[in-house]
Image (cartoon, rainbow, N blue to C red):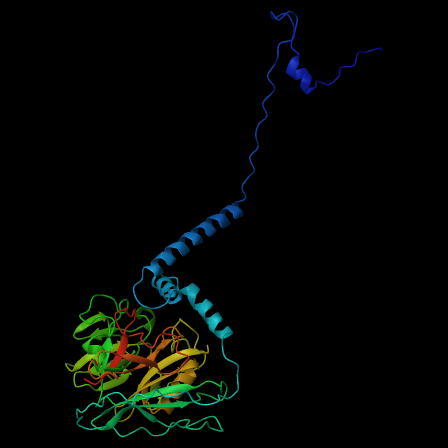
Length: 415
């Protein structure tokens, strides 16, 4: 066949054939197969980074959830979680999500409600026989912007116990603008010469330990006729907190401030110019900048200015909002509604008679005004709460013990 042909070595040949003559009777000695190097897949740097990022986010979420669950107070988990994230420098992620959510949940434009909400019938509460030096005159009707008006729209209706034979609180309902005409805004007029307004520290805001518990119970509940929400968390409010000689957060010049005095009077204005510290000041709560000043809506109270509501939600977002104002004769006016922008809240405060006003808290979790009645004369501490309007999310007993309220709030009582 000519030159010999060498067949290629096979796996069987490698495994079973070696030179003979090594004491095996001529049989081939087995040879171990050649080792093959294992090849490991090369990890892609981008995938590695993504995996590390996901693991880090999962850890942060777990830590934040545990932190929220452990937070004291009677707010729901979502609110506690959002507050925990804001308190730990993650507000940049919460703000846009909340803004998107509330913009998506905004009510339809136009429409007309069937009727106004029922005003709490608290006339059966025991009348207070104490006399006040002077009673403020009843408020004037609220100017309307929507026509035709609903029956009773803009008219103040008395509620709560009589003090010295006179109503000390009134409620008015009206539409805030000509766009969301199916939504009702509600105002409460309070006479500080007949009722005492107090600032109550919460379990988380302003922080620290206080002589007052973060709720109304016992004798404080027995005297209470109403309670309503305070302002933003202090880190978002750009303001301070002062109560009974103690400063929990420094008071900021120019900040919108509600000031309570030892004689029971209340004032609202820009700190350092319209209101200042005096020996008669009992409490100060600050929240952003004034919304109404000298009877006029502040130029900053526009749909897009971020100074009005800060970085928590855009000024144009339609959501539950609340505010507090003072009238020319010294009455206090609380205004809230389920569908307000920063601008329409400011205009609603002005129309309710406020000459100076400020924002309070925002979104359905925090906007709360509850009336309290005491129908059992033998046990006045037995207190029943009633919401200012049905859409308020939190319980009518939100500020009553023994559960703790996480944020500061205001109570209104007969003494």
